[in-house]
Image (cartoon, rainbow, N blue to C red):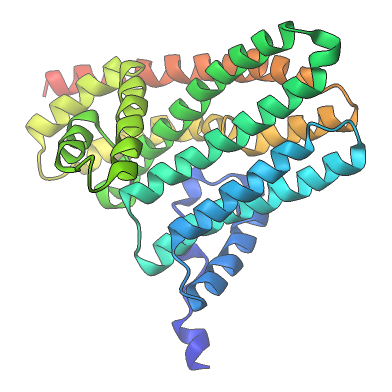
Amino acid sequence: MEDTKKKPSIESTLKSLDTEEFIDIHFYRPIGYRWALLFNKLHVSPNVVTIAGIIISIAAGICFYYSSLKINILGMFLLIWANTYDSADGQLARMTGKKTELGRMLDGLCGIICFTVIYFAISFRLYPTWGFWIWILAVTTGFFHGKQAGMADYYRNIHLFFLKGKAGSELSDCASLKEKHLKISWKEDFLNKIIYSYYISYTKEQESWTPNFQRMMQQIREKYPAEVPEWLRVSFREKSLPLMKYTNMLTFNTRVIALFIVLFINLPWIYFVFELTVLNAMLIYMVIRHERFCKDFNEQLLTE
């Protein structure tokens, strides 16, 4: 009975219901929670879980090179398994209080590595029929995939910042990341230095897509250095909440459903077209709408 009382609830391991998708809440989070409990008992760190997820996702991606539906289904199973680990690492970090910036960076790399392997596998699979053109399509899709996932992640963390404050968000900014990067030695911590270098570039690009938000945050830092006022937090959440469904669609579940469908019908090239059309349309809509209401808030702050 004592163990049961001490066991953290699944709700305590979630970021927020605002940012959780239906499939995550009802499938990945419950499974991830059970993995997190097991890994906690075994004293496995969240970063080790992340790395294990990366290895499984690489194996999944390789399975999509083959035209055999049986091997593709194995790849689908492995990809779902990898994503339960992707859920578990964050839940374990929140459960144990072992959240680190390095862990967040590794988590971001997990998605990049996973889909890079998938793109390569599909491209090699289709090369005998498509020739060099499949590589052009894959590289173009990969370029936009990075923008879609990066901005979805950024908007979600912005939303969490206004919902739960700095402690409940993983919102980063280039200036603070550069300060930390300068303190890391190339000689003593080469890997960490490389990861920070990548993450600075990643964050810089996110900031370049959001000029109105950056201006708004600058005003907030100057006027309210201690804490964002309640009226702004509530108003921002109201405007931002409808966009959270798009951030979810641009990350994992929608992509994977589309991927599994095209593999079942043996037309994997359609996945690239789906990303370039449907998901890019979502990205453009999301950016325009977010920048529009950030501009409105910016004007409100100016007239205060």
